[in-house]
Structures are given as C-alpha cells and as structure tokens.
Image (tube, rainbow, N blue to C red; front, side, top):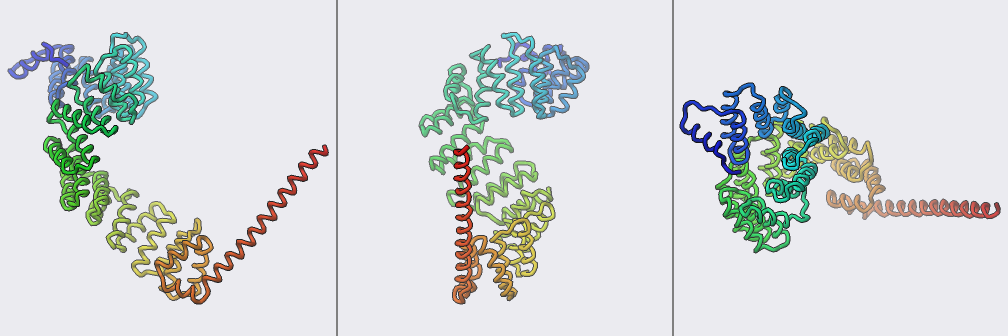
Length: 490
C-alpha cells in the first residue's frame, strides 16, 4: 500500500510534536495504511490520538473494534460494535462476522457475511474483507469461497490471490498452487510468500535447484524475515545436507523474535541429534524454553522433544514441571509414568498410575500400576492390581503377570490356575511372555508335562468344537434343503 499525502502529513506532524489535528476520515486512512504496512506500536499511536480527538465518533469506534479484532480480543470487539451497530452498514457486518468467526460461532458469522453482501457493488472489496475475516479465524474453506468471489470481480488483485494462496497452503491443497504462485509473482515480483510457496512446490517435486533459487529470491526480497531460511533449511535437511541446514537455521535464529526463535531452536535440536551432537541438541531445547512463556503445553512439547532425543531424565523434568502447573492433565501423567519407567523409577511411576486410576480407571492403567509394584517386589499388591485389570475383560497378559507374582510368592497351585487362563486366551503368547519373565518355570512346565497336558486339552477342545460346528452346519444345510423342497411342492 503506497503512502498517501495524508499519511506523510501525519508522520511529519507527529515527528514535529506539538498540537496535532486530523478528522476521523483522515485518521481512518492513516490507520489502515499502518494495518497494511505498519507495526502494532504505530497502530496504537494512531488509535490513541483518534480517541483523544474524537472520543464519541462512530468511525473511531469502528477503528477501535477493528484493532481489538486484529489483536485477538474478539469478545471486546463485539461489545464495542454493539454500541454503534447498524446492519445496513456493510463494514459493521464485516467486522461483526469476523468477530463471531473468531469466537467459533460460524453460523452467525455467515449470517452477517450475507448481510454485508446484500448490496454488494462489484467495485467494492466486501468479499475480500469477508475472506480475510474467516481466514484470520482459521476457517480456510469458508474464506476461500469469499476470496474466489472477490477474484471473479478482480482477477488481478494481489491481495485476494495472496489470501487464496495462504488458505490453500493451510488446507494442504496443492492443486494449481504453483500456477497461483507464478501469477502472483508476475503481478508482484517482490511477493515474499509466493516465492516461498514456489520453493516448497519445487522441493516436493524433488526439483531442488529451482526450489533453492525460489528460496534465495525470497531471502533477497526480505533478508530479515526468517521463513525463507527455515523452509530452505528444511529442504536441505531432507536432502541430507545437515551442516548446511544448521547454517541456515543459525541465520534464521539471528533474525528471529522470541516466539520464532523457540521453533527454530527445536528444529536445530533434531538436526544436531541426527549428527549425534546430543549435548548440543539438548541445550538447543533448553534454550528454546527461555524464549517463550512457560505454560503446561510448552513443557509438554519440550518433553516430547526430549523423548525423541532419547533424553529421559530431561523428559521427566519437563513433565514434572507441566504436572505442577496442571495436576490433572491425563496426557502429562501418562507420559510421566512412561518416563519414570524408562528411568527405572518404579516407585514414582506407581504413584503416577495410582493418580491416573483415581482420575479415570481403566484395565490398562491398573496393569501398568501393577507392573510397577511387581518391579518393586510388592507381589501381593501387584497381584490384586492385575486381577482388577481383568475384571472388565480377561487379558492374557495380565494373567501372565499374575503368574509371575504367584511364582515370587511360591503359590504354585494358584500359578497353574492363572497360567491356564492365559494359555486358554492366547497359548503362543502366554508361553512366549512367561519364557521371557520366568524361563526356569517354563522349562519345568515342559519337563513335568504340564505344557503338554495343556496343549492336548486345548487340541481336544478344539476338535470337540469343530465337531459341534460341523453338526450345526449340517443341520442348517438340511433345513435349507427342506425349505427349498417345500417351496417346489407349493
């Protein structure tokens, strides 16, 4: 968006200091220039001056509602719109539609979108504004429908084409994506996102030379933006040029704000892990945590990353931190139980599974808790937990673990009963699992004929079952033939 005379005059007056006056229409023009090209700080300055000069003007209230919407406070934007709303004004309907979409109220958002378009002039950009509103609410399919209406009226509008490009990318729709990027580049050779899209399309086609050329164009257009470096690094990583990928990620890191830097550092961690530079990889994850607010989700993401890097103690640290902030998060507790087990901390793991069973008891959780107690030598407690895990539906694995508890407690008669149950549910699995847990016991069962007896009984039962099934099959065939004969006679 080119800088108009009004914007230049505004900037000169602000720089000079002293008394400043602009009417609401002029301030609206300045505001929207900064929406397109400026920063949040500049927008705040325009809005503050607007409210000071014209506190009750409805145009200024519109600007404030738009600002609240763009900064993520859709609820407050709606409340402000209520004080000036006029459904005959398309701009009011556009803002209200966007706010409702942000709040997830898509049906109402679409109704106000319809009101905004009821008197649409083909020369207006109402469809574009509606597309932008739904796109900002992550409703990309709906946004595309409005962008396409805008494109029909304005086939060479770069803003509309850019919106379509973004929505299609977010939806994973690659159909015609390169042609779309090429059209934008023909209209605006300095379009940063179009060059990145072209690079990604070429990389997907394994045309790496053209992909790198496209990314390099994007870097030349906006050398301080991080996206092109990151996309190029990702492709270098895929091509197994790990060192080059690291260099590009370092370039991106040096230009990034904190939120961007956190993601870049995590990407670096994976590349460093592949290069077997694990201490550096783990440090990159720690560094990423210094860039963002430490919420439970941030700790959880870091835990997943440490897990992928094979750093179990660090994973435990992250999960404990997430658990302290959000104690009843079942995803965190499940991961924490696994991580404690991986570190051999069975007592801590047992405590986690006990908490999970109180929150949401399931057979598998009782079995996991029982496994921890078994590892701690608490055989009586473990046996009871495995028995509890079997109550909803018998599980052969739980019966084998109950068998292991019986062996440790020298309850050999009970051991035979529990193993019989496991064997009846899965004979091969039961033998294989017990052989791993108690190889001497399986050897004894083979030597004293216990396993052979179980096998023979099972085979006898299978033969008996087969005979019963054959009788049923013959009886059904006989009934079928009888019905057929009766029908012929009729």
